[in-house]
Length: 402
Image: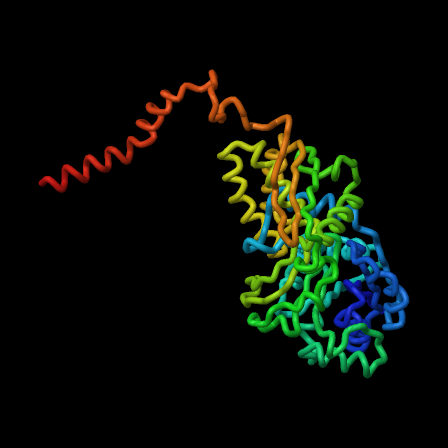
């Protein structure tokens, strides 16, 4: 039998894809699950995949690689999609797909399959990565082929084949979880007028109104843009993310409800929980304010927009993304120091920073007496800086006199 490697999460869609591939393609299904921080979701997957019909399952711990090679580069870039989304699902897919190609080659598989729908972004992210590493490999996307048209249909398909699933018609949200975030879509969220039921939805983050009444100050130390310590304690990438997720979660940080523009052309509504990530972005921004000059900081903001769009669209392995990352790395050489953020009932605010590369000169900006700045010099600067406006006004006045 020919083999197919399936991106397997153990959720409703990928669980029914296993028997569907066997029934419709007569393939030997090898499941692959990447551990990118799903937590307790991973425990039952090995048995579940085999019970669903897979001949084998790979579960690989990719958490460290996910943080260092995907989370930190995107955070350093300051990339945010449509002002709110911190790209948690977007940059997990390229890592997963790359590993799937490696396993497919190891197993001699001809096909790769995924459970992304034909309406979503993930199909693009998976398949662009396959094209980047194995252009000859064929991709099977059941949601673009089968007669199943809804999650209700999928539940009925699973029940008819005794496939174990945790979803139900009452619990109909589609969720994606990793070390960076947890996303929620579907169900009552599909109506943008419905207020998200935080008490039902939230799993990583305390609803802000139930968070502690006392503000919490958190110090994050960076070395060339990479976070290396929390509150004076040096930590590796995994421990650091777990600690920030804990602190952010307890204080209601990082809850976003948004209607975003999908790559495929439609709008979608989702709720994201990104507690630790929100803290990191705020801390990193606060330190950059201190260490980057005006032009570099402003140009980097333009780069961040392009970077976010590339990541969202599945172009992680595109040459432009790599080139932008090289620019970002150059800017981070002086982003070393400590930023202090204040957490309080869902609010995350950078309140202080220090760095050996700080461009802030207290003697220059003081309102007190100083001997390093001659205020009279500003007059000449203003005359030159405003010269174009002055000339334009003179021309306008001359023309009005005619």
